[in-house]
Length: 423
Ligand code: AMP
Ligand code: GLY
Image (cartoon, rainbow, N blue to C red; front, top):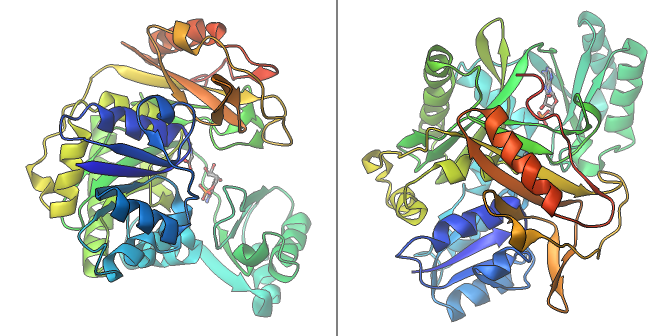
């Protein structure tokens, strides 16, 4: 079977790493990929939303399965593009329809879904430029801190948490009337602030059945002790130690099952991953957000623990026979430590040579923002590469990644040395 993975990050390198191990995988393509995927697959220089070029590639290379990594092509309707085209409709696309992708593409859509299906989440109201005054009045009824969310996709930057009421009002005005986040903030969701510890749970569904993958916790802030700006993620730990059996049972009953039942009731066409961002408040799980894809770097910690043939699992997703899959998990903890370019998540340079990748032995290097130039690996993004390691607990696994990260060198390299500090 010939397969195409769409995307260019560590998540996509991890998918490629798992799929390349399958005996059923013949030719493996990644569009556009990175220097890491190039070592195990064929990179094709096509953008993730260039559906016409993707179609051309799928037809010329007789590709029968497409795995979509990032959210943007999903929200833009890549699943529907394939289903509607008679030449492509037999190709399995792992990812939801555009309508279902609204669970990530619109915060308001997600909140309406959560409320309709009685899934625990923060209380909210949403506002537009016509209802700014009502928005201000709603803020006055809440206690600090105030949570403002741009409705649409804003590359992870659309959530503001503010301690001061006046500041919250002026940010709300800015979002709604000055398009602070472009079209994404034409609508804003204001939420009750939830105080607790976060974790994520990953579910794979065929639209009828589902399997729950391991939990993970990611570290989003650039600075030690969770300080500084938000990033795409500086590392992840799986499983999350505080998610014991009793808590997982609550997540399953109160969140995962009602989510899948909601998808069925609402007739959403969904064959793919659901990444549920949760917060534990007074021992109870509440949903903070849905994403309609795997997380990055959570994938780099979660998928290496899955021992099943991933291609076989995806075939069951496509055939809606996921009830036949029994997950075979590595019981050990996996962690991943992300190295980033100096300056990230603000301005940073690209094109620095990376050395040492081949000298790492007991960690898996998943590349993210890398490319090759004159047979050398060079930096090509903010998040550069990540080191995944196993251990009997997260401290043991982290020690291995922190030992091996010293073998990797590129100018102005930075990584957090305190992952797991809050556990
Ligand atoms: P989101 O993009 O919805 O995941 O929000 C980004 C981050 O903002 C989350 O990971 C949380 O840390 C925080 N956050 C979002 N919603 C809330 C909330 N209602 N209460 C507290 N923190 C929140
Ligand atoms: N690591 C967070 C995300 O993938 O959205």
